Amino acid sequence: MGSVTASLDRIFSEGINEVIVTTFKNAAPMGIIMKNGSLSMIVFCTSHTARNIVRDGWIVAHISHDPVLFVKTAFEDLPEKYFIIENIGDITVHRLNGIQNWIACTAYVENKTSDRIFVKLEPVHVNITSVLPVPVHRGLNNIIEATVHATRFIMNKDPWLADLIRHHGDLVMRCGGEQDKKAIKLLYSYINEVVPETFL
Image (cartoon, rainbow, N blue to C red; front, top):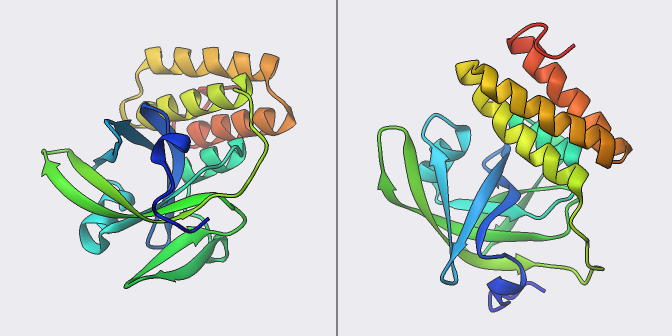
């Protein structure tokens, strides 16, 4: 625990890993890409996360199975009470209170387009507890898929995305637990604030 020598392939799987990423006073669901033993992210330039990475050069990746937290951090800013300020070497990071498994990384912008930054991550501190293995859970997985579609739907109002959200929402109601069902209802309410009566 705490050592950056911890094997990344014991934490992340090859491909895209969904985590909650914090930057300065900000938290958002993000996909961390693991490829050939290296970590990276692709972040939209308009996001708080991108602006903070460019300015500060760090992120903290939190491994969470809380479906409500994924939805809340996608659509609203968390109050300051959610964050813990921690000094790691010569950097000061903001991490989430109550999440035991997290990895602090330096973040370097390797490339930039008109709408995205491509970010290289280098772990500088790993805090992983000894926990029981968690099986793949269809409720949480469908919450994550619905949340990804929802963040795009509120920008372009594409009916096809709304259909995908409904599909995943139906699976959540069939396969999820009470927290998953609470999360999908919260997701619908966020969408309805932007596009009224989309989900009744």
